[in-house]
Length: 406
Image 1 (tube, rainbow, N blue to C red):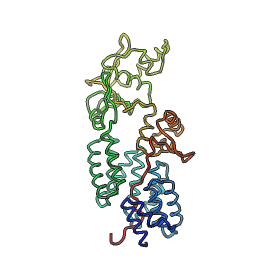
Image 2 (image 1 turned 90 degrees about the vertical axis):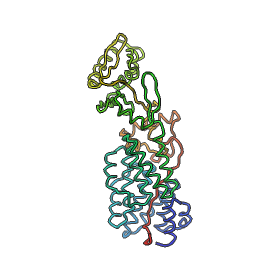
Image 3 (image 1 turned 135 degrees about the horizontal axis):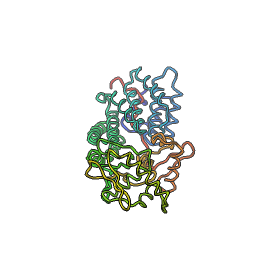
Image 4 (image 1 turned 120 degrees about the horizontal axis):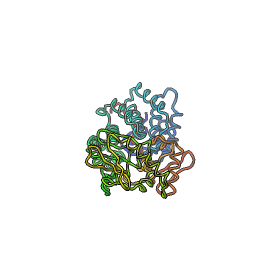
């Protein structure tokens, strides 16, 4: 490894892509191509970065397995940042194995963190946590320790363990300061804002107010009967009844909970559950059937009594009834929630993360675009969706091996 390649690698590790390009921008040998690719990724030109890394991987000879494996890891991180979540996990795993066999434990660990972050994005928390427990952050460089703590915080946030998340974010910020990489510190600060931003609304007694994440955690642990419109479940800790696959029953449960302790007129329930503006006898008969089904589903948590004008929810053992709703009521709120991270998502990645068909996600994206809430960039397979034109950046990719004096 010559001195310019080494200097460029050091610049990238310190978060200085311009300094790296100043040293290798005019070179086309494989190590220089790889470093230029990483530099372009840090600058946000992910398309150019991906092309340079592919060229570098092809240019490395058959005896340079470690260099090719590092290129695979770099491409995987670019795919993660560009929200191309369908990249082959087997290829990344093979690259990680190659790096471990050749003693490049830093880059092998980095590959493992990429898999953890991908699993976190698509909601497979148990798998992400299992992989994370296999990794010891203590001997790692500060940049990777930051990524480790961000992953810990991400899992804790999704599981509503705010104290665990807050502690992990404090450790992540300390590690990012040690790393001295502005982009990494910005990522930590962005993640920390989640704890300071309203995560939901609580609706009770005809009034509503925003809740922070820790307040949501406290509400779900309380003795209240909670109709959770974020997950479509009804809960009275520790009992949980899921109505996610029964939208009519959930609509009725939410309407009854929002009005509690008052009753809800039948015409209001018909409009909420069936969208019926002019109800006839068939609608009223259907309402009686669905109320009976809801009584059966919630029998361990609450009763539903008939009143002169409609129906009323009567909790068993709970002193109050509340509705936990998303911060903003939106038909395609789940799609907007993923796009809120500022990154550019493909429809296939959103479908994978949401567990829906790509066609359903595409219809939601088209609807949001017509409403002016999101915008598309690119065409055909390269099309991405985002809420604002925020440039992406990757975390540090340590392709070159450390010098012996390190």
